[in-house]
Image (cartoon, rainbow, N blue to C red; front, side, top):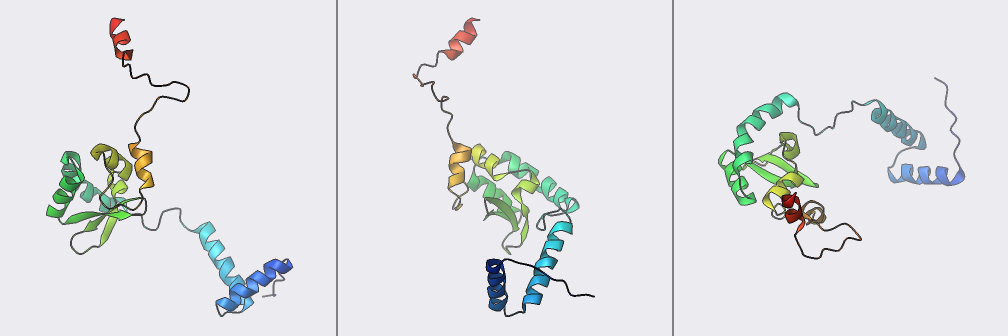
Length: 164
């Protein structure tokens, strides 16, 4: 195979050489790794690597459907799941289901059909100890009048509808 000539600007070449040196590899190896990473990204399957296969999710959905449907609060849901050997834990901006007490991650709560936002709205509170507090404002925000329409506190809109 013929060597490939690569042309880079001076600043780009200096940055690449520094990165190669910091990784203790040659410039050629550094470029090969970059090309390999780019090809993997371009031609890899479009599935998320952490996504659980559907045939494994279905039994979990069925087993936990009643608990998710009937729980009235985070503590109630956590107790119901723990009784069956499961626990919800924070996972990025959402929640993941884990085996309890071992801690093995099984799937995201949203893969079971229960997004963190929907559960938060349902229980009127964020998951206890969840670090992403900014999500509370997005999902639990109270409805306010549109800009330019001040709320006069008078709820006579329903009276008008009833009179028709």
